[in-house]
Image 1 (spheres, rainbow, N blue to C red):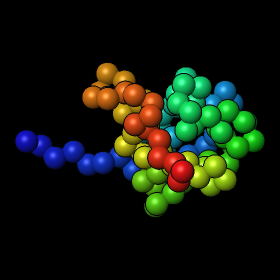
Image 2: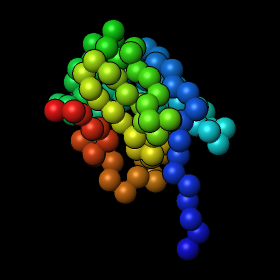
Image 3: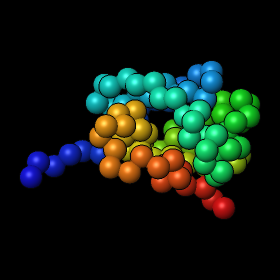
Image 4: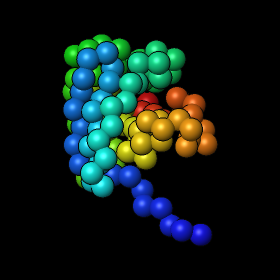
Length: 101
């Protein structure tokens, strides 16, 4: 079996309408719309506030995107799979988020 490297982020930029511009270390650049997941996943709902959403930063040396104030982290691998839903074995939004609560 071939090994697959886990996706890691080089940069993240917040866009309007709950979207993220994601630049991965392998050179891939993707835009991911999180609006549906944010609306349906209670743990992500603090991100409905555009000022909170805009605070996204890279965390853990590019392995996560983090929103410090509501203490929300989403793994780079989850974001990558969400950008390609046909590749995701479990596209449930609750599996995408980790909150400190």
